[in-house]
Image 1 (cartoon, one colour):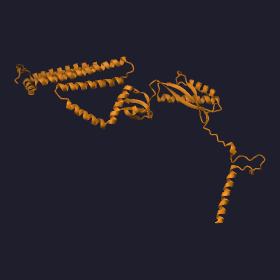
Image 2 (tube, one colour):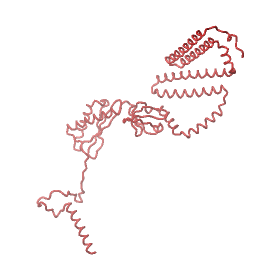
Image 3 (spheres, rainbow, N blue to C red):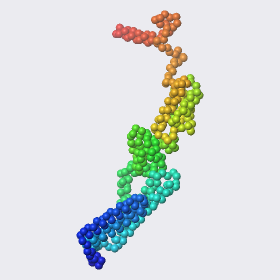
Image 4 (cartoon, helix red, strand yellow):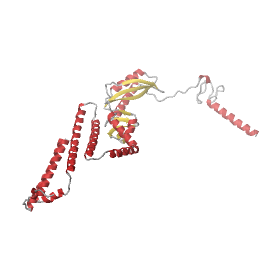
Length: 396
């Protein structure tokens, strides 16, 4: 392919001038690239990014042409381009494919903005859910775009789909647990039993949610440990969210003696809780009778805290226990120790302790013959056994 007439046009420049033109062209190229990147970052729009990229590409082509002309290399460059021998249909397909993919890229940006605006206007949808929704739509659009481009280039998808089907079966059997965790992660992200920063209890794990991924959920326990739970385990276990409502009711049990005035004890406990600053006044603290314990009547102290956290609960619980204990001590309300009552049946005569004082009128050191003590009975039984053993040995 012969070069067109304008390619053979010579430009008479000295070496210094050619070097200067080259330096200026490279400087203009660098400035254009930096400007395009700054504009793309400032506007945060995919359309702006594409426009900046096209502008930078135009500057690259212009700088290349200037440098080639300055160094009188038009003929060499034209021959290098002509050596590719690319058909026009391939160029058209490549151009259409690039333009289509650029349009898809810009379109996903428009979808992202639309999803963001929809989330701002709608209550009950978190940013995390909106991001997951956008990613699913984005992947779907990209898959459709890939299928369109492959059809544009005449690639048959039948064999590709069959191979993908077999690959999906193999991967599904080899990664059943991982796929189960992924599906459970999608369910958790849309059902929203908890969010990042919530105080939750999952099974026997208690802590703050630090991250939610498509595969696992991460907790930070109050002992400083990081626990990673698979989402399939989270979805199948009991989840208790203590932060969702913004307040939490705490229970403290205390027992009072059976001889104490229960109504007075309840009033004292309620007044003591009313003076604690770490609990809410609305809803008001409550004191209810819970049960008859082994050694005491059990009172259930109920109070609320706001912005629930483990530190707030422990601090409020400590303050309530201290205040109620002080109030009971001042009023003389006894909190009994565990007690046991031991008694004998009346029909068997009950029982007596072996070291009880002698009966009235008996001489010191002389046991009552009519009613032997427990210790005397044991001694008599022991002597009878010894005598029986001696008689047996004599007979032998």
